[in-house]
Length: 74
Image (cartoon, rainbow, N blue to C red; front, side, top):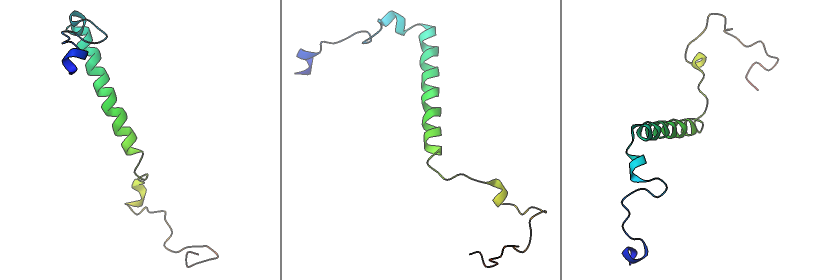
């Protein structure tokens, strides 16, 4: 049934086959592919909580005791 509705296309839907086989079109397609992957990676990275490298290492200027009026963290 789909053969009756959509005859076999030799080229693309928007561009002719000659345009799609040029070097410029291949460069553009590669750029779009890399851009899509980077955008997806950044979108996934925003889901995770922010990482603070300073929390992994103890700094020299950090106090060993709290000076708060609530010394037990409350």
